[in-house]
Length: 311
Image 1 (cartoon, rainbow, N blue to C red):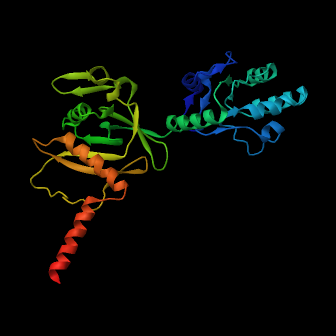
Image 2: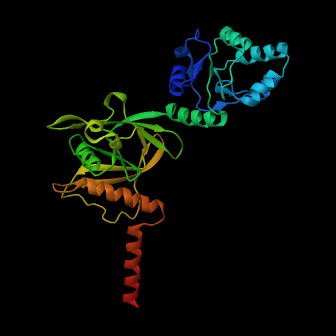
């Protein structure tokens, strides 16, 4: 069994499901698989290659099929389905379980829920939500801000100015996801999602001032619950003895949970406007994703100019 799981109660509360088996403690039902399943052949008695670890969802088609069965056959299907080891069963489109289904669920400890949501919509939304909730997760020290739709993770040593940069970005109309601690989840081979721990959500720590509530000071438009991590900005103290890449023709990357993210190291000196630099980096990153690289364009112009002078 996977070490990562969520209690089924969290699913019930998040989607406001109607509980038809309140006798079963949903806190003890563990959801470990992000995918969901709509039993089809299983309702006809074929249980080989059945994804029994998944959340099971049935809609109008499955309910109509069961309703057309003789009661004895339907009870046999309920018995097989509930004894197979499924974690739960959810009926969509306002369908309600009959007494035989509830009895079978209670017998084998399978909670039975219902929702008025359309089956396909609920299937897709629950899969998306479970993929985030059950994704591998790590925590990192940093600040995550949504800048022009790009999720920018600002990292660096304590006291270097990450929170101050985030505050200036918020004043300029961008949105804070989290300060100090970032929870990073790998929801796919391409996507990392950053969120805030519940205890520090919407708060920023500023040395010399203390804790400020961003939502209370700047309004709900200044905060965001989660954002994809599209770029990392690593702040470091400027050193006279160190050479810095001024062109950045080649992208540099950092890695989280096996996913690579573009990373820019920015040296910090007094007087540098970090908020403007972060904004420029976010827009430049978007341009690169759209196929335009300013550094490469300048390099090509210089090369053409040199070739023209040599002719």
